[in-house]
Amino acid sequence: MLFRQYEIEAADAVWSDALAVLESVGDMVTAADVRRNLELIAEVREASDESDAEAASVEEIDQEENDANT
Image (cartoon, rainbow, N blue to C red; front, side):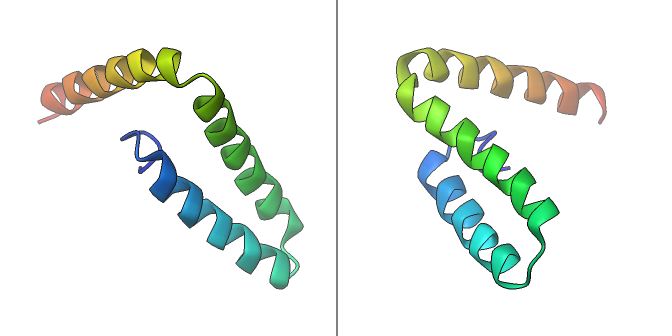
């Protein structure tokens, strides 16, 4: 949710914490999924200008979907 709201730093912190917990308990399958999310965060940071426009577009689409479902 944080990632979709473009709260990149908060999403990074949550996923990093989750990764540490998952690795500490040996759940490497779920840890791999978390690593993919962290990769997305890294990509967003590298392309922040493009990501700003994409995030706004995603937010707009999400809002339209929410409005249609209520």
